Image 1 (cartoon, rainbow, N blue to C red):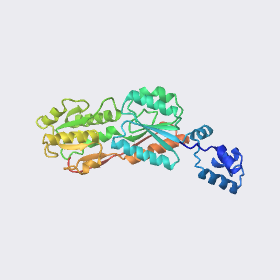
Image 2: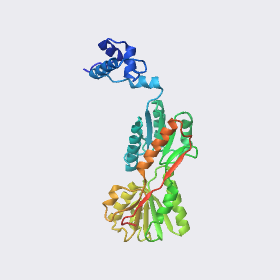
Image 3: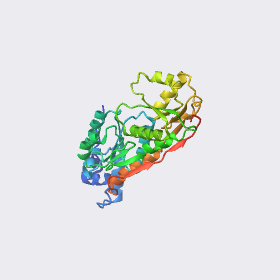
Image 4: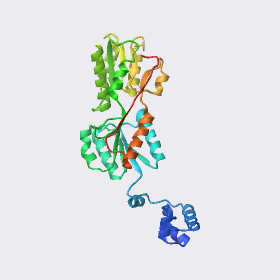
Length: 329
């Protein structure tokens, strides 16, 4: 049988003091109300002895804030978002805030539901890597007074954003091949419209048009012809490959190995996102490394600044990526 939860009244009875005196001390206001140090010590020791747990919701009502930030991400299993979540949590924790992480599975309707659920939990602010276009979120965004920071995936010109310039990074990525591609295959996974992927595609289309590079764009999502395309890739003149995230990269590398297409002899290969795995593949895989820790830390800082009203909405911070030149390009 569970023990009864210890209340302020229980501690008051155990110490022979009033409930209000106990409440002041346990809420850190003993000095403010001129309660002597010995009495404060007695109350704190008795609370510890009786395993007193403060009522979080009562404290929230008193102070008008929960010291909790919501984080909506599309895929917690993705290493990028796992590392991003960790960086955000560490930075918020340093500043006295807790993080409530919610995974949307890149499902637009589920994301809106979870967004509203978080607001009903009275979070103080929200960091959001949205799968929805901003138009679908505006009704919910406009209905809440809490600050919102978009991370990784862009909101609009009026929203706070921390991430990278996907368009420009994609343009520069094509210039990283040791030999200019004649025909480039770009693989990506997209169930729905995702701003980061579209900006990367637009950047690659721009540089390929400028440099007269033939381009094939292949969406791997439910693509029954993917095996056939990879198998015939070399015969069809493809000499270079870019994958627009590391999960797709690993999938395509396995297909290339299956059909004995050798990197970089038959096709040169670059991944837009880096992965620790790429160091141990033979040959090692060249990749664009996003500064995930910096992005996470800055998104937390932006939200904290908004909470303090030190910053007006609409601040954009875009970090540069680092190209990890290995053996595959």
